[in-house]
Image 1 (cartoon, helix red, strand yellow):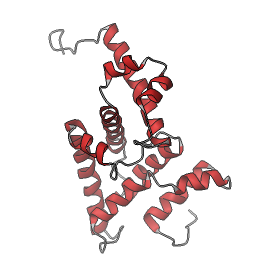
Image 2 (tube, rainbow, N blue to C red):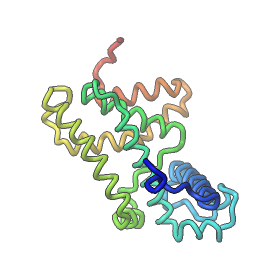
Image 3 (tube, rainbow, N blue to C red):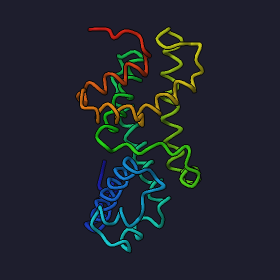
Image 4 (spheres, rainbow, N blue to C red):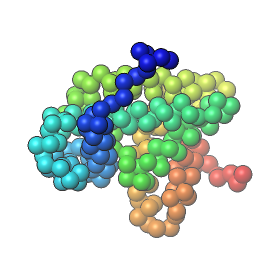
Length: 209
């Protein structure tokens, strides 16, 4: 790569803007995880980041655009996890790793609640091409693993692949993790193991490896 083709280094101002946007989206992730989209306000986001609301609007013109950017970044992280899954693993074990990552994010308070029942955010997401593109990429890869696992008898072939896919998505926002954590009887690691087991093996006896 020569000087003519090398990517241009972002200016200091651009780096500052990106740093602030990342801080904003980190805050949005936490608030969406704690309160959901309907209860989150732009005032809360600005206060959490430590900036004026007017500054927040310079980055994101609405609460919907904020949530769309947050969900798109989450999908970017999801795809990065998927791309780093060891290729030698079985398709079922690949899916387990992705689910384990999602539950871990949930327990850490960084997993936004799924927006499927929120009409306003749903429309914002459907109108946000980067979100749709990344969701399609993630769905395609997980779908390939699901079908392969079904063909090899690792997952039930009697279940529609869509049911398995949506179960995997939903497990990352499962309130069971919150209830178990509040109960105090299990460590975070225990909770993750238990939720992964119930996701893929139901209520069958736990195997001791």
